[in-house]
Image (tube, rainbow, N blue to C red):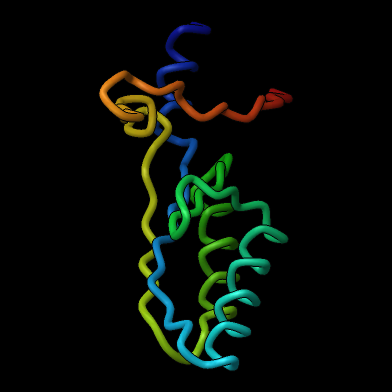
Length: 114
């Protein structure tokens, strides 16, 4: 039963990805880009690459809350892409650094009460 629950959880647990390409030509644009990036980090996102931030969410409802927060922080200019992956799909990602496989980002510990 525990193995079944683990497999089921891999499809319930989500990762929210935020990709962005924001202009930084003017002082106002840089300020908006910095505010957006700091807002992501305050909401629990971690930087995967310079313009890619990820957040681990325990459920679809939790992911929707964070997606809604990202939408409320959108800067006036630039492009932002938000999407979700299941934990199972995230686990199938391959990371490379140079030619050698890189260490996978750490998965947060999950506290399961029931």
